[in-house]
Image (cartoon, rainbow, N blue to C red; front, side, top):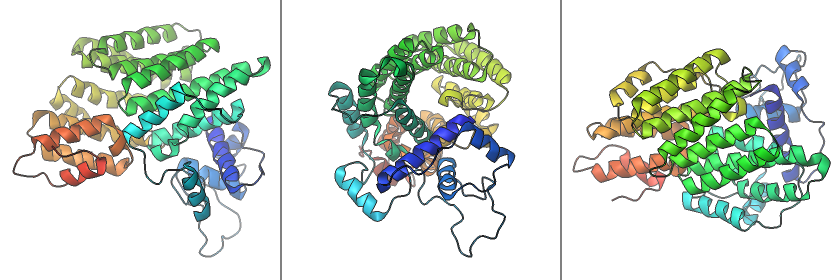
Length: 431
């Protein structure tokens, strides 16, 4: 994350915490300058609310992120460790009240429930409460962090965000339209990537198209590029449309490469992400040469970027290029090559927030082992590791569910240890 993105994420946590406790705003808000001062050690011990927000967003305690106080801490005190993974701290009464109102589900929604709720918010938007562009953007930052951490229960308000996005755009006055439009675009980009995760290519396409429209209204080339990326993802989820997905991603990458700011980190990241998806789409249609060309170009772009970053929530950098080499090899059914690439992969190079991307390699390797039918135990082990890293994803990721179904159907007299219990947790019916 950039300093501003980290500040926005912390402010979103603070806003939600105070709103859910029923109190008024009692903080000025973190800024990019404040984050810089923390990094340089000019501020060593921010107030309790700021410390907790930083710990929640970064998934760490105060020691891990280098905060310290010049006087001894109280004996036995909780040294800033978040009480829950990514949610603002709530009391038991808060949880009960929110559950009764339907704001926080007792358990993760099923894929069908998620799809129904998102389609309903698109087709039948309810009268949403007024919201500012700043608050909507804070919700987008919070949602993207939750998505990349694979904490999907934190996305329960995504349908509400969609309704509020439409209301914000309709009510925006001339002076606030540019910021409002970008915030609305961000909501639809988030909705599209989550719909793709659920395996709903049509829903992912509709939301990506709305993101593209708002990006065009905002005249923001990066928003349009990321909408093209999500469009390609949506098309790749639909049978027989891999060539279209490749064309959309490659064309958008070419446009970004000619922009006057194409050497900046954001534009390099957008171009690289589009090239990686073009490579994957080419692999889906079994064109190894085209896939290889896209990968090589993306590798060159990653070298120009020079680091493993997360600009525009792309997770782009040299490590992600290597991860895509594995994904492309699996899509090409070149499983020995995929396994060879995996032997040289170090996922610790990825930024810490990218839990979902770090887990993806295990899903890819499960698919590689499962493709032959002779390595089902190894496939199951990688699925179990995928579940360990991102436990909420195993019930929502369409690809994981399809692979588990395949392994269950193929299982004969000799049962694979752990497979059937995994299928039960993933909500996959036994054949």
